[in-house]
Image 1 (cartoon, rainbow, N blue to C red):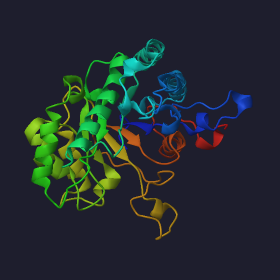
Image 2 (image 1 turned 90 degrees about the vertical axis):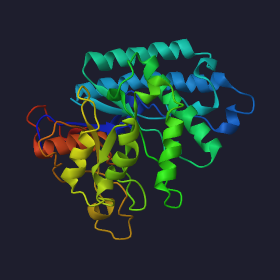
Image 3 (image 1 turned 30 degrees about the vertical axis):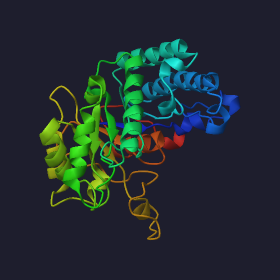
Length: 327
């Protein structure tokens, strides 16, 4: 693997989330609340308390990453619980939350850490149902506002990664037209961060399709997912698809990809869905000489990254073996 490739992980730090009380206790950015406990009475105090704790722990995640030479991290979407049900400034603690998020952003910038996010599959701008598209726009704007609060200038550096979300009877042209129409309704800040990822089904969106239907029309960059490509190559080799996606990224922003392996292969169990992500990654990642940022989507999170670094001895960064981590 190219020594200039940077590996990161997504959302949850297993080491900190599972840390026992005697070692400092659990650290997480995923605190939430059941809708029934806050929504009927609009208890924004409760939601704000959870968001403030999440924002505070985000800095702890980033500090751990830097201590372990990981400078690429995907922030989880749960930082603001139920964020599509209110305006952020309705939270009583919004100033404290803003202060914590800006502190985290400053820390990441100081240490050269790239932060991204990946909203869930219900963010579907191309849906034929208008109410779904409307809710999707709200949710995506909240993710963009989070990066605003962290002090980031809008850029694909802090990519907000989503999927098209469907083909709706194979009508790719109509779906793309709806997606693009709703894309034009987004804030400029969000447009400057939103990217698209290829799918893991041959009935959905390949890299080539995203390029032809979306990128050629409005210039949205494509996140190449190695694992997904194996299920829908669309007559492109892995290298061809990776390089095609590379052409969609601005010159001043490093191409970002996703990597995982099949859980069915990992456990040699044909009953497991082949698209399911493995716990760890065993193969050397093929980068074809490109300088890449790669978010590892293995279930073991940071442990998978540390093990893979150790396995292939990335010469440009110190290595720490996963088995030496203390829970």
